[in-house]
Length: 146
Image (tube, rainbow, N blue to C red; front, side):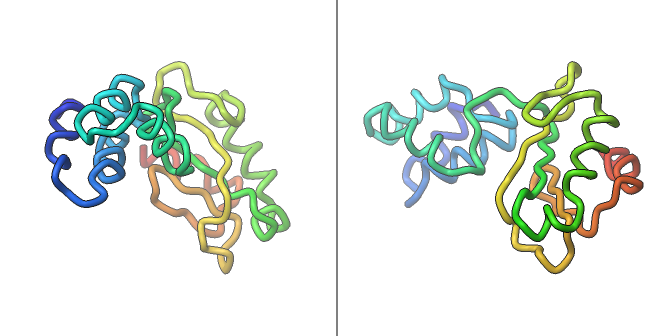
């Protein structure tokens, strides 16, 4: 479904803009500018407000990203548990640096704040799915799922 169809489906739902943005991002891995502008029109708010919603929440991105968004927690517990080694393994395996997207648009690497799994650090998420107690040796098999 295109973004206009998604927006229309949430038009009369309380909190519909946020729900629509989640659905659009699931389809595109980010929120295209035209979807934000169309959301402003459909939800009858200024474009600045729709853009504010899209940029306020850390789970939304207005920048084009790969199909699979890999986020690594950069909180203190993950840092102490070896997050830097996980970053290095991800960058080596994918051939990109943090903040970049692979040439085939398959993966994007991002940092994130705590994901609430401090008992099993370090933690990465891929498209919201958490991987706990990650080690550099586990990276190839985790990526193979995608």
